[in-house]
Image (tube, rainbow, N blue to C red; front, side, top):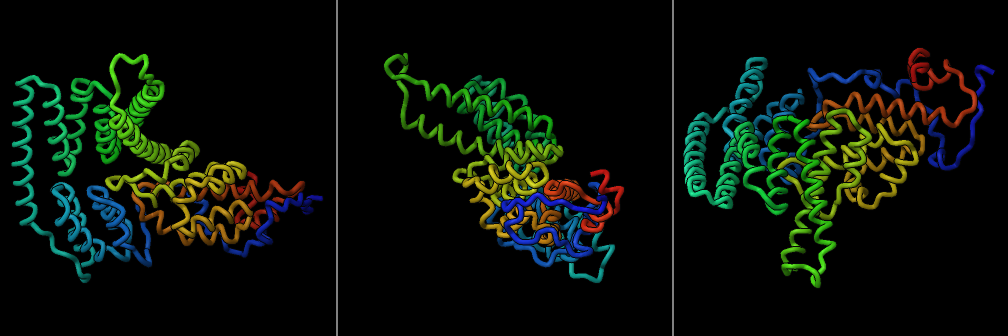
Length: 415
């Protein structure tokens, strides 16, 4: 009986034909690799720069392009030219441009025969002077407001100074400014929540994920408290009348901001390898009100949500939270391969699953947040596929399974 396989027929599992017929060599050896945070490299057939420019604004756009420049071996010259054009026209972040210039110089020295762009040193000096002048002007206004002691004026001046620090890439200074001001100059959800969001954005660029989670939790509580208070409002018993128009606008604003916090928490959970929690956040982000070009796009939500779900959800969860989730389908429908991947995985069509995973690997490696999770996600997806495969059999042969999954019996035993 060692080599015998008894199959429990389940039409729902096999409704896409014979998904068990995996061709030899279909599952690449790279699926067995443990995640590495160094030396990410990819060759991309095509990069849609117009889509990137439409989905992101700086600093997100520049940092994503820089990541692509670092990992995309075959398109570095063209990516460098795009960075040179976009950053000098749409940013005041001199520090980023210096970082890019150093990386570009390294590539030029390694391969001088290619057509590389020229760093605009005049832009660096001019922009640096402009940033310094803006910073000095807003710092003087902040000092004046502090001397006058009017909290609203102090908060407004801090917001303007923060904006300059953020846009110029001075993330540490921006974070330090808000760390001092949040507690002292914000007393209501109307001011606290937007400042928390701004603070969290800075911390994301600093990759200070521990504090990101802390501030996201604070923001979620503040929004929940405000929503509960507004819901329970009774004009017959209230001491002060409520401005209905303002209240409605604030609720809508907070609903939109809340989705941004959900997306950020999802990214942090994913980067910390808590893929189940990440998937739960991503699939719950409301498509109708989500717009976050300074950090994330709808395409990010689709990819992060799908891959985290495949790595952590069982078949029932996949059906309930992803396939039958009308809200999340709005994210995935424009990305046809994601829809095909989810359906193939649920239907045990592993031929299609592993083909699609290989085709989509470059897209993941080009993405700044999921790139370093790609190997671990693929490992977990492969493991779940393995478990899902054998769950329909009463008796299996390890050598047979090793042959089907193009691996050895030791790994099969491990799974």
